[in-house]
Image (cartoon, rainbow, N blue to C red; front, side, top):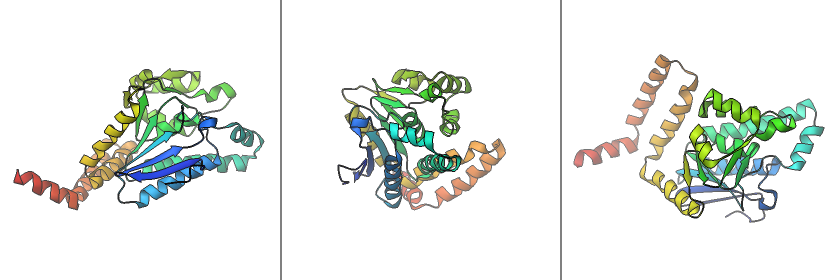
Length: 255
């Protein structure tokens, strides 16, 4: 278990790696230390063969309110090169989430705004409390949710993406589910239990099959139909050769 004073906590239990943003007094706002902590936790999860799913949540009432005041001041005072390095650090985090071998789930309670909404969107799955709020208010301070746009555009329709990122308004969990930002909405009263039950579902699946499925799903984004099918052939063959598949077929044939 991580030191409780750290900005990001990490633990593994029952095949679930838990990453907790641990700045409740700051609404779990993002800064260099938090981003560094999330990356380190993802690397730990990548190296741990026990892990079947990763869940990211926030301590306290909110998931993540975006960049904190010190981070915004750093942006305002930084040079072009410094801002580029800072932006690339966030890009690296998004790539790590997408490239991790197992699913990454955002468990959102309270507010997920700006960079916090971007963090949730960058996860493979989003589970939300019924009272959660989502939004990209960056345009209200002259900023652009630029990198997350590549992910948002793949999650929701063009019209919905345009409305979310140009109006900067907050939306409810129910609306976020309607437009495609959220997979499941659970009652606030039973949220923790419902999330745990949802995560248990990955104990019933093949880790290698889920890994191959995640990789293929994202890999075909930029491919035409024929190329996507051709890539599917390759993954299909690889899946057939895995031990999980061989054992699964053997069990099925014995029924």
